[in-house]
Image (cartoon, rainbow, N blue to C red; front, side, top):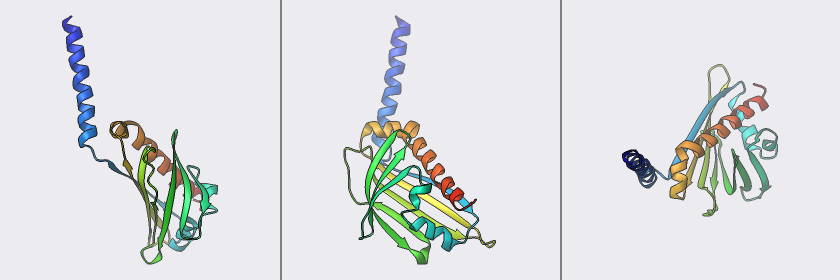
Length: 172
């Protein structure tokens, strides 16, 4: 009987810790990766900026529709999760920066506020460092609990795969 009570208390303590993590944990999460590609900044940025060939190397992002006003409708695949997103594309060539910013909020979706920031930095040998940062917001307490254990690792894996596929597409 004492073991059952101790086990119950342990379960309540662990469950309470998860609830506290969810309540006080950040709803905003950032995942980041970086790679060096053997191509000049201009080539890397042009390849990243062109939307149609992106579907050939971006296995975890499907670009469903391109709009003339700098927007696109895309579907992100993170492990078993699928997140449809309407995004605005911002290109700042003077900063070697490309951003996609989610313009629609889908409260029924697991993630929201998705923002990709890609910065290219030239190296002295002519190669380019690509820094890719993906930020997202988690809406529900249950998703915040699961974020550290399941969601964030899936997104980190997808982002790493994405940037490696990009490097391979460039011939690296």
